[in-house]
Amino acid sequence: MPIIGILKIVHIISAGLWLSLLVYGIVSRGRIAAAKGTNSEKSLILNWISSLNLIGIIGSLGVLLTGLYLTIVMDYGFFKFASGGNHWLYTKQFMMVIILILVGAVMIPTAKKIKSELIPGLKSDQPLTEEAYKLLGKLKTVDLSINVLIILNTLMAFSRYFTK
Figure 1 (cartoon, rainbow, N blue to C red):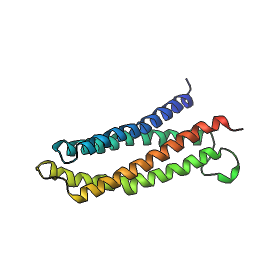
Figure 2: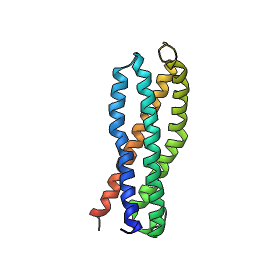
Figure 3: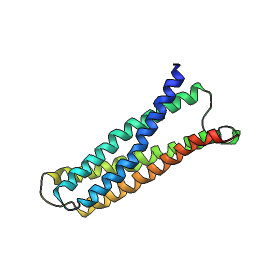
Figure 4: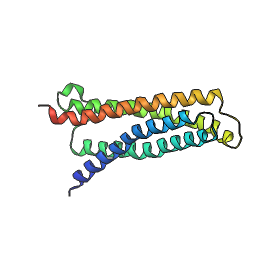
């Protein structure tokens, strides 16, 4: 199988992995809400944040690196909105930039703050602080926003088969 085919498969698998965070997030947030105020709440939050981090890195880097390589090798170009061709791809590229900004500027710093609040709290029987809950709410909102953008990106990838 040529390298392009392999990279397309890796790209699709990476996108699926990244998209799986939506389902995992819904389940995890439900379990966290059900465990609010209990001892298991803190470990559920840490597991959710760790999974977001690991799966998000693998999926997003897989999509980003294979997407960049395929765009260069197949000579599609970047952000050529006025070209009239491959508008779906240029919109996807723009949305990927937004996702990367959200992850780098909001999600990662918020997750670090939550972890710094939770780790000392894990060693004590004290409940989470109000600040930790505010940060957790912010993280949930950003996670949901990123998942919506990932779904839109996936739908745009499929839309290219229905145009022309």
